[in-house]
Amino acid sequence: MVSFHKPLVNLILLCSLAISLSGCGSSRNVGHRNANVTAKNIDLTKKESLLIDQAKSFIGTPYQWGGDSKQGMDCSGLIYQSFNAIDIDVPRTTQELIHQGRKIVPRKLKPGDLVFFKTLKSKAKATHVGLVTQRTKNETLFIHSGTTSGVTISKLGDTYWKKHFVFARRIW
Image (cartoon, rainbow, N blue to C red; front, side, top):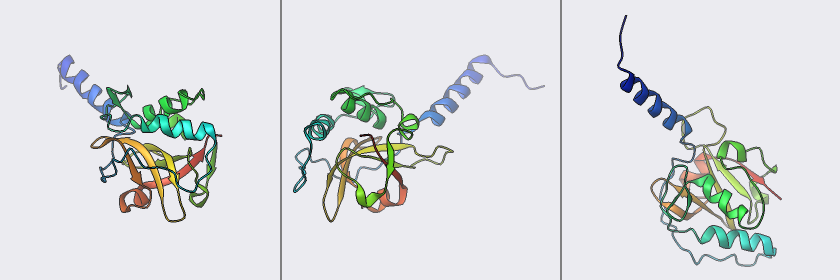
């Protein structure tokens, strides 16, 4: 019978748990760190506008798994804090957010919608979430927090995001 030291077993279990829970963990910095991106030609409601402004206030915040403050934030923490600021309760994790609101097709996306991605090889339906900030005829921008970029704005049409996109949902 093989004997393991208890600290080694605990370390292995802790590492396994961290890997399985790292839902927001994978993202690439695609160079869209522009806090001044504005929604052009879009009639936003006041709540949508406040939601997007709140999310943008975190641009530049570093990534931190489980974080939901200016000191560090993960993708679902960004969504949670942004909606919370406009008095809308949403779940704290990506795995819970995938059940909120209703599914929508990408061509009907509008600011305030959630976009979900599968960026990790796992059984989860989605492992990363972002918030649509701008939708024009030619492109959709979304804000999210990734491991390498922190809170940033990216284009849904970029090769990486198109490849990993799984679905979108509208909370309201």
